[in-house]
Amino acid sequence: MKYKLFTLFLLIFPKFLWAQDAGKYAFTFLEEPVSARMMALGQSGLAIYDNDITLALANPSLINEQMNNDLAFSYVHFFSGVNYGQVQYARNFRRLGSFLFSVQSMNYGTLDYATVNGTQEGTFSAADYAMAMGWGRTLDEHFSIGATARLIGSYYESYSSYGIAVDVAGTYRNDKGFTVSLVASGIGTQIKGFTSGVTAPLPFNLSVAVSQKMAHAPFRFTLVADHLEKWDLTYDSPVILIGRIDPVSGDTIPLSGVAAFSDKLMRHIILGTELYLGKSLSIRLGYNYRRRQELALADRKGLVGFSWGFGVKINRFQIGFARSTYHAGVTPNYFTLTTHLGEFMRRY
Image 1 (cartoon, helix red, strand yellow):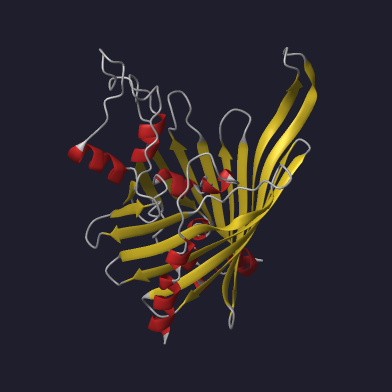
Image 2 (cartoon, rainbow, N blue to C red; image 1 turned 135 degrees about the vertical axis):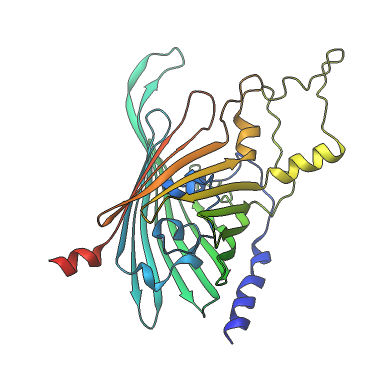
């Protein structure tokens, strides 16, 4: 019965598929990871089953009873004036399963009112918020399922928007360190748009994630194939196309054959690795090909698309840090602090 339930859970995923174009959907802040570990791995940590509460919001099938009473705080010093944060707490209920509660926000700071001539006439604020409740259930030693429901709100000056979203996921793991997850996120709707009668779709993403921890080496390798609901994710920026312009006609020289196929394929792939230095320290690296292709300058690619970070355990706290290069000159910092409240209760 457990295997039939797991199979049925996965078969319903295709019913939620639809194509989408960048810049045409609502609540895009939901796509930004807030977990330092997730970002250090380039957003490829969706299939790591080691009771990390900060990964479970992105993949609810990772929620399990071992997270009971875990608490996590995450903070991102994003781009200029933008701050992004999240609080998570997990609780296990014997008959109902394991639950994860989360509140996240992205604050855009104080912005200036200005006329068309540039005259300032005061200030206003803008922010996005989301409250989430996730549920996970372990079916047996190999299979688990989960779902997360979100209430979403955006408030920009005197304009507001509301929506709801659901994520569903299933995970298989074995005793050789291999884990694979199927995750469908952003299933929902914008209930109220910023303009009366106008709504937009949510940022849906169907992804398959894989991780493999080496049995005789201190490494874990991770891979995510994301946005499988749409094959061609190409976005050709006029800046990025420098070097692919015909000097005579001025037309863009398109990729073709193997080069075109490889480029489209790699835009779905995110890679990551963790190196474990003892039981209390890990070094993390990630690579996001699509981010590099979309945001790097043609003549100055630098480390765009790459990310790195570390995790360290100090007493009763797990501390995570990450940096991710979005484009030349801008590298956001990610901080995560995780603890198990049960340890404090036993001590006091």
